[in-house]
Image (tube, rainbow, N blue to C red):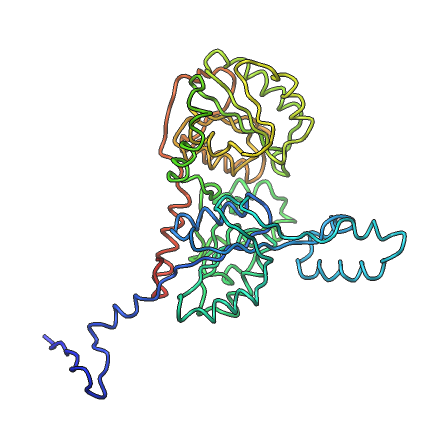
Amino acid sequence: MRPIRLPEPPGVGGMETPEIFTGAAAATVVVRRAVVIGNGSPGAENQCLGLVRALGLADHLTLYRVTRPQGGINEWLHFLPVSLHKLIDQVLRQFFRNTRLAPVVEGRKPYRVPNGGSVGVGLSSVLEADAKKIVAVARDTFEKEGPTLIVACGWDTISYSNSIRHLASGNVFVIQIQHPRSRLDRFDLVVTPRHDYYALTAGGQQEIPRLFRRWITPQEPPGRNVVLTVGALHQADSAALRLAAIAWHDELAPLPKPLLIVNIGGPTRNCKYGVDLARQLITSMYNVLDSCGSVRVSFSRRTPRKVSDIILKEFAGHPKIYIWDGEEPNPHMGHLAWADAFVVTADSISMLSEACSTGKPVYVIGTEYCKWKFSAFHKTLRERGVVRPFTGLEDISNSWSYPPLNDAIEVATRVREAIAERGWSVG
């Protein structure tokens, strides 16, 4: 057996670090802080914040937001990279200033990042995204505060997170949520739903004309730095729901049971519908009302006015049904905590992911309107037994359960493993 070299007494010159202690020294590099880069979309930023919560860093984060010029011709330029869009906006404003075309070109002034805690984690301020500034802080404070975890989500954030990793790879660990479509090796980890790879499945290949297959992304199966989820990450973990249950106790606890929560989203590119779904929902709700104690309905920002108007007209004044008017405070977390069952429109992966994390019955309406990867998502939920179709034949008082979806916890585990491979740990 090789003898262990003990350290020499203090004051003896030339002392080297004993081999027995080198592993412990390496483990002292701890990630204790996070930077979230959002794009102003609540759904995208909610995913970042959900992962940060799961990693235990919610009290040590800074939120930056990527913004674009708004209004006028800018609404047609969102396909451009953010930096190019801002440059074109500046040039057009200068060129057409004080002309008749100025209102068409300018619209509203460039969007300003608002201060406030609307993102749900008690942040007092939101900062304008600046990759160079984030890099400078990460470098300057590395020795004292350790590495910085960078979590970004959304198309507009890709160039920022990519630049930060390129400029400060030894000081940061960069996670990009949602598939960036190309060059995934630009990031330490990419977190994306499994259905984003639907194009590579047999069913997906059949739906794509052969002529267009080379243009559909992704082109390759997930690599080692890709973490696949079932749905969207979110902040509705058990701790958050316990707090919500306390906060909304006085309003929701006295309601007659079972309490059915109906969450209505809005049509998307892969899940198009209109007033036909609203009428279908109304009919099914009337059919299950006898088995409900009370019903609460919420609309999202995407809900078309014509859909909400039909439902409001039909159920306004109904003794069992309450429709949230959109005014603060938002009861969404309280609904998740106190609901006995949910009905959710098929378009919203975020709302479905949150509801399916509770282990309570989740009924989905409108899956027949979904196509492409949305269909794959719903198929996965049905195969796992976490959702059932809402037909109007249900007895809401008959409860059922399933293993709740825990995407954020599972991703957090993979993040810790990947960070450990760098010789770091998450504090």
